[in-house]
Image (tube, rainbow, N blue to C red; front, side):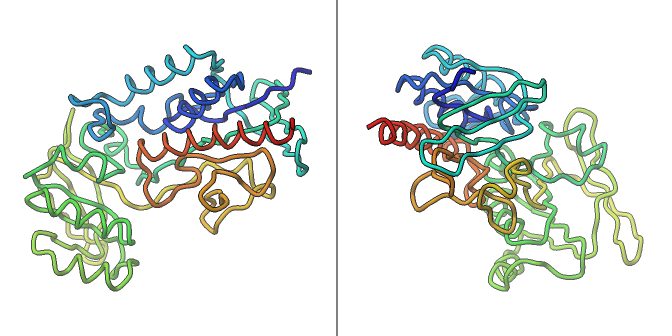
Length: 312
């Protein structure tokens, strides 16, 4: 069986950037896209904060361009999903990966770029308007709602941080917390309550996101009084957490309590030799396309150095 120098699992900014650098280093990378080729950015209509695009670019187009760039240097992109792995624990060992179509792969190095999936409420109206005003990233998309009225759902530190961020650029932010208190730290709670244009609503849940093509309003329910209220908004931000796509790596790679892969120091190395992690799968702090791309570059360089070391 052929032994690949580098197998890349995942096709977002991290995976494609890793592929570009690995291919240029003559590692002949093979990249498996997973079930969502292009990752989370394929659900984002406009990317305005990635360097090099002065007029902005839509997410799907950006991912197609990254794929073409990776392929230009010799990356083989395969549309399939890796659903099982068997990692070697010894330096220079061969790692095994298995696809959903039944192919067994052997590789000297593996770069994991499977990302993290934003948690949504699961409402049909919310899913229908994703990309039409419903977003899971205030830092990514908040700028488009400058001077407008928006809402955010969540009660943790991320929700509090994003609410105060939105409050700086939006005229009003309605913050919906399902319980009678926030989970956020006291410092973050104080920041929210001390921001005058944040309307904090406890015991409040969304009934429906109003709008046909774009978000026009929000119908919400107080779960204590059952009172229904509708407010006009143009953007809805979901901040109830992310789930890293690391299920198939459990019991083999070190993870934190939330399931994010742990990397060593400033590198992308995991606890197993020849296995590297880049992008949102190991980053719960920043979760930006540009930082994912940066760690993708790092992972390819780390893989190249690892291969040089075992060959010397």
